[in-house]
Image (cartoon, rainbow, N blue to C red; front, side, top):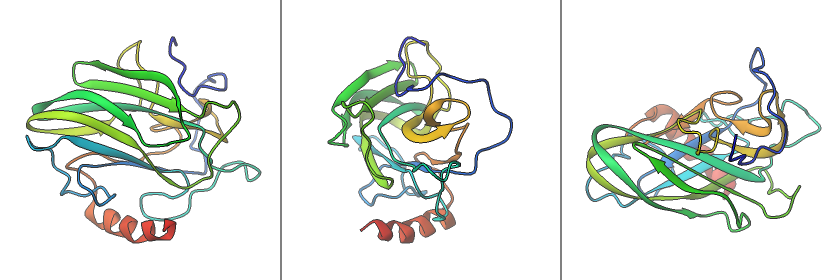
Length: 209
């Protein structure tokens, strides 16, 4: 693809079976750093924060790389976001929140209800330790009460190919990119999620403090 995000490895054929690791990527339309049914967009909404835990699942359990010699560190990230429902979202800008990721691999791109963006560490091979990261904020204007969700594959040839993050932990499908919908499935968009899991995650999140 034209924009190769964090594709540090060669794209392989789709692997059969799931790898033995998972992660959790989620949105927060409030200020509490968790995704719950309370994260509903309205005309007063101006931004949504995007968070990623590279080493814990949504239920708080520890995620482990399929290769025990590697870690679930993070060297880059890419986002594909879609709005749906009763209303619309205008994607005004994206503010990167990972200070070490100064390389804007793919600037914010929008097409209809979709957007994409990606950032990376400027030094090849450099990565941040496994953990919980606020990736950035999508700055928006909202009409009605739409919902935001993550896309697993690109809806546009000019977008990044997947939602995911670069890591030394190998993916059987995307080389060094751990991709949502392929390598992990735990995610939460606005006005969604499972309250029981979100409550558990809120408690586990304290481990990072």
